[in-house]
Amino acid sequence: MDFGTQAQKHVWEGAIPLQIHLHESEVTTLPPPPPALILGPRIGYLPLLVPLIKPHFSNTLPPGVDTVWFEYKGLPLKWYIPTGVLFDLLCLEPERPWNLTVHFRGYPANLLSPCEGEDSVKGSFNNSLKEAAYVINGNCKNVMNMSQSDQVDLWRSVVNGNMEGYLRISSKLKLGIIGEEHKIKLTQPRQSKDETDIAGPSRTGRVPVRLYVQNIMEDLDELEDASPVNSWDNILYINRPVVIHEEEGMDFTLHDAIKTLLPEFFTDELTDEQITAIDPEDEQSNTETNLSHCNEENARSRKSGEAEETSDKRNQESCSPNKAEIKLIRVQGIEPKLEIPFSWVVNNLMNPEHFLHICVVVKLPPDQVNRMMM
Image 1 (cartoon, helix red, strand yellow):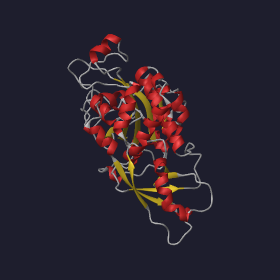
Image 2 (cartoon, helix red, strand yellow; image 1 turned 90 degrees about the horizontal axis):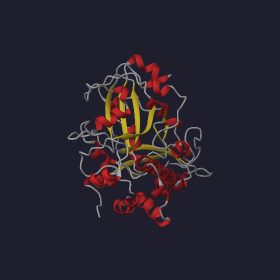
Image 3 (tube, helix red, strand yellow; image 1 turned 120 degrees about the horizontal axis):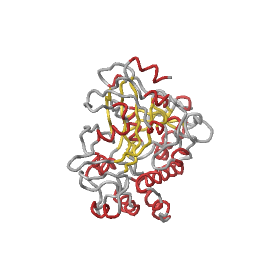
Image 4 (cartoon, one colour; image 1 turned 135 degrees about the vertical axis):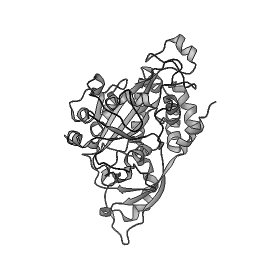
């Protein structure tokens, strides 16, 4: 049995050193407790760290019921986004250790969806897995029909970072997207049975992708000088499948994938350094929704990665500058070249719920900043 590539092993073993501080409003002892030092798995979720963190601070907490949440530089962190994705998105210049603040009281229900610890995280993960299965196969029957023991073992393998156990169980779900060869001719979203037999493990050319786009408004030489994100309203979120179209002898690249997701930032003369945008008047713009408006109910109701139409025009307008420059693309902490085969990215850097999370940093020209904030 295939127990994963070397790159997959690096992803599963990847961890972010965290230095977690208790918010000063919840400190009831002198001296205050020192920060907790812990490794946060990239593929994990912050609430899963609470059993390791709480004993460190339990003796200083005020009376009350635990409602744990985390923040970074004043920004409440969305608990259902993998820890590695949060780090890649919010730390343009990687901060090690990553300094986070933990709260055990005062949950910001107006900013974050409710979280009841591991059960909520598990539920969110399962919903994402079903959504990914629908994108890939057109149905989620294999996920829905998992035995109870397989469901438990699959989740425990994610929690414990057990890649071999995960691959052993997830192989039953038949969610293969791209075969081992990078050059696969996929000209249709679905393949016929005969085409599937020829292509071996390939079943579809639809890749579940979650794209996070951060706009930096300053004219900076170094990304580390960018202002921190102070609101999720400043992050554009796109939940959309990438349909792979390859011509014989030509790779479908990361450039091609990003271009299908952000066509307004690309022209045929694209370079890695400068990207000129065009007016995004196309039907796909309706699937763009701000991360602050995307909750678990949206994820459950989406089918085939096509989000319901939104009346929020701000996101569409924010992606229609006359000129824009993509400053950074980051996947699993890696900043890949745009010419890398997309199949390699998918096969090696996908998260366990079968979504590929991509973080993009875009520089808009000054005359477009006001449109971004409207």
